[in-house]
Image (tube, rainbow, N blue to C red; front, top):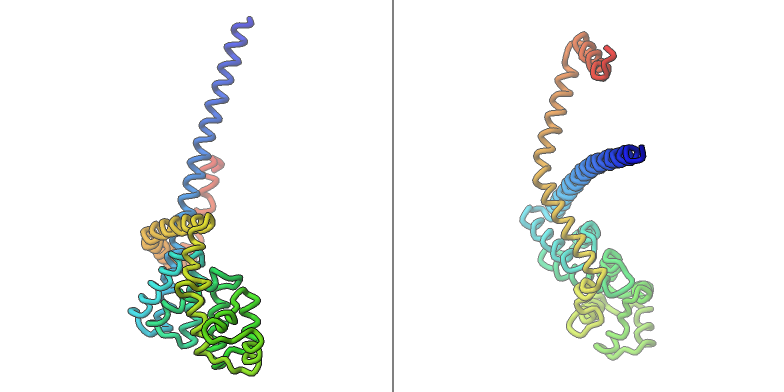
Amino acid sequence: DASELMSGLLTAKKNIGDTFKEVGALAAEVFAGHKIREIIDFGIAGAAAVEMIKKKFELLLGSAEDAEKAFKVLEHIRNISMFDEHDIADTMTFLINAGIGIDELGAKMEMFGNIAAGSNSTLSNVARQFARVQREGRLTADTYRRLANAGIDVQPVFEEMFGLGIEEFQELARHGKISADQFEQAIERMTSAGGKFENAMERLGDTYLGKLDDLADIWEDVAREIGNFWKPIKQVFIEIGIAIGEAFMNLPAPLKQAIALFTGLIPLLIAGHV
């Protein structure tokens, strides 16, 4: 009758609902496990990248102590800016190769970071333009134009510091009469108290996008700590796998063939076909 039919439908509905709950729980468990593995793998990769950067610094600077100092500079710049640690490391590598010593590396990176954060340029480009001026011993008209197009116009600072108007400044730049020391004084003025780029990295970090970047950095650090924990464990399993593989390859051919045959039969045994 109608009541029995209704009761049957309700039971069927409950059974279907329970099934979907079980499937959902299983999917959530698989998804969570997959995400945990992703976090562990990401953390291990991050920890390995840090080791690689430290090793690069050690090779460049010649000592583990100086490499540790350089890495602290990298961490400081990363913590107060939105720059990626790989970009920071590449820029620092370039500066070290250009002859910047470990004792002045921190100040130079902070100066270039503030200029890049407050302009349309990149961290590496600011460092390269600075190195170009130092290498040539003067600020050329071409380098001045590149910097000005990126929002780093040093002419107003030269006018403030040395009384050079725009026409006189451009004329001196065309003839290579602006020294590298004068140029460095100008960009130091731009990043010091009251300058155009004063604390630009920190000011950019206080914006909404900066806060999101801070959050991403925090989670990256968490993943890296997880990676540091799991890395030696994963390394053990890798070494065990290598040892098993090498042992298998050293077995007599008939025994290897027998193991291969048995391995191929396992899925059939599980399925009940053998």
